[in-house]
Amino acid sequence: MSAVLIIGASSSIGGALAKHYLQQGQTVIWLSRTTADFSDPKLQVIKAPDSAETADWVSHQNFFSSVIEAVQQHQVGLIFNCIGWLHQDSEPKLSPEKSLSQSSGTLLRKTLLLNLEVPVFYLQGLWPYLIKTSGIRYLQLSAKVGSISDNQLGGWYSYRSAKAALNQWIKTASIELRRSNKTAALVTLHPGTTDSALSAPFQRNLPAGQLQSPTQTAEHLAEVAQQLQAEQSGLLLNWDGRVLGF
Ligand SMILES: NC(=O)c1ccc[n+]([C@@H]2O[C@H](COP(=O)([O-])OP(=O)(O)OC[C@H]3O[C@@H](n4cnc5c(N)ncnc54)[C@H](OP(=O)(O)O)[C@@H]3O)[C@@H](O)[C@H]2O)c1
Image (tube, rainbow, N blue to C red; front, side, top):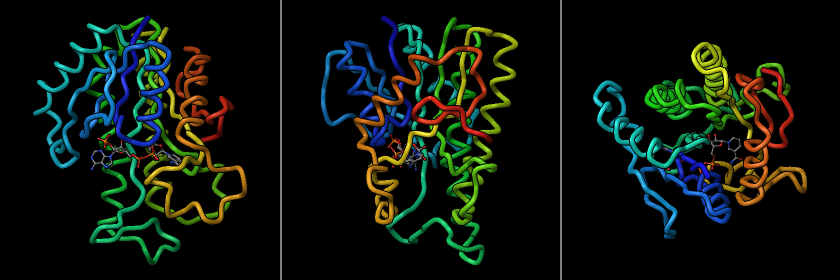
C-alpha cells in the first residue's frame, strides 16, 4: 500500500488527515515544523524549515533530496499540502481586511508568503518526484474565497488574492506536469470551513451546521483524493468533490 505525505502536518486539517490514514494502516510522512503529539509505528517525521528560512530556495536542495529519498523509499502515491495563513494574534496583530483601507504591505506580504510562496517552494522541490511517479496525486489546500467568480461578499483582499494566485499557479503547473506525466493529478482543494486556529476568530456568524470538525474534513478530503482522476488535474475542487469555478 502506498504512503501519504502531508506537508504542514501540524495544521488542524493535516493532523486529522495523518490520523485518518494511519487508522487505515497506511504509512504517513509528517512534514512539519512541529513534530506530532502522538506516535505510531507507521508515522515518519521530517522536520520542515520555517518560512523565514525558505526565502532562498536554492539553499534547500539538500532538504528536498532527503524528502525525495523518503517519498521514494515509502512509495508515496498521495500528497496533501495544508500550509496556509489568515491572521495573527501576536504583535503586530494582523487580520484579514474588511475594507481596502485596512490593507497593508505587512499583511499582504505575509499572506502571500504563506499561501503562495511556501506552497510553491514545496511544489518545485517535489517536482522531480511528481514528473516520474505513475498515478501520483497532489492535493494543494486552497480556499473557495480564492475563486474570483464566486466572490459576492468582498473583503479579505490579501487572503482571497493569495489563494486566487495559488489556484492559478497550480492550474499552470498541472499543464506542465501533464506533458511529462499523463497519469498525475494536481489540484487545488477547498476543505470546507473547519474548526482550527486559522478559522477560530471567524466562526461566530456561520450558519448552523457549516463548521466541520477536522476529523470530518479529513474524511471528506480522503474521499476526494480516493476518487481523483488524472483527467481532473488543474481543477479547483470542493470538499465534497464538486468542481468550483475559478
Ligand atoms: N480551516 C478552515 O476553515 C479553512 C477554510 C478554507 C481553507 N483552509 C485552508 O486549509 C489549509 C489548512 O488550514 P487549517 O485551518 O488546518 O490551518 P492551521 O491549523 O492554522 O495550520 C496552518 C498551517 O500552515 C503552516 N504555517 C503557518 N505558519 C507558518 C510559517 N510561518 N512557516 C511555515 N508554515 C507555516 C503550518 O505548518 P506546520 O505544520 O509547519 O506548523 C500549518 O500547517 C490552509 O491552507 C487554509 O488556508 C482552511
